[in-house]
Length: 87
Image (cartoon, rainbow, N blue to C red; front, top):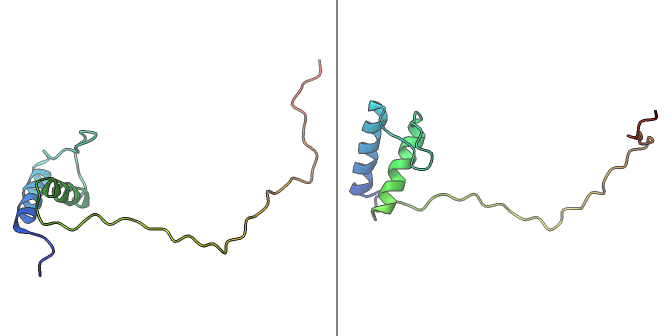
């Protein structure tokens, strides 16, 4: 059972060749891509848009802990300095 389809493989291959030639640019900003990981991410994104068999993006999930205690704000023990200047 393959995770990625042939279409996704060919898209990533094409994007990696563009990166090596120095012609790969980011979709949003238009800046040249130099990172290998970013190039792979762009290839998979293009494959998703084309309807290839690609797993969904990994999303970061945060666990909510209801047992967390709220901390009170710390108060400074010293006197506050007045910001007004005397003439």
